[in-house]
Amino acid sequence: MKLNLHVLIIIFFTQGIVEIADMIVINKVDDAKLHSLAKSTAADYRHALQFQRRKVDSWDPPVLLASAVTSQGMMDVWEGICRFQSHMVSNGELYNKRRKQASYWMWKHVEDLIAEKTQNDPKVKDQADAMTHSLESGLIPPRVAAAQILDAVFSSENSTRR
Image (tube, rainbow, N blue to C red; front, side):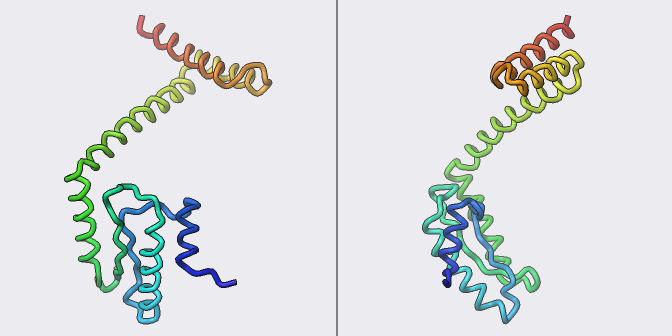
């Protein structure tokens, strides 16, 4: 059974195999043998993009042809990057994205600090080890173990401040 390339690309998009992109660049157009294949691949991507969920509703990701070896199409790639950046700034999407990223990274740092405290503070580490044992033995659920470890983190933090 012959599977059409744009059908395969759609499968990749729907299965999360292909990342949702702001721009797709097909490279290797400098090779005469690959040029027609690159053009066909670009057409398949353009077709498949109609079915892809977009990262930014108001942006249609362009599909471009380029060659890193000969620089053919590289100016188009750069202009596409500039257009996207300008679009993201002008409609406030870049600001919103940065705001969401800041919140994500704040919580990621909180997780990291708690994990670090759990590993480096002997009292907290002992409590975490005890909770892990109780959890693995089926004596307590994960939520209770986590709450007790957090209690140990905060009580250890309060005792070091005194």
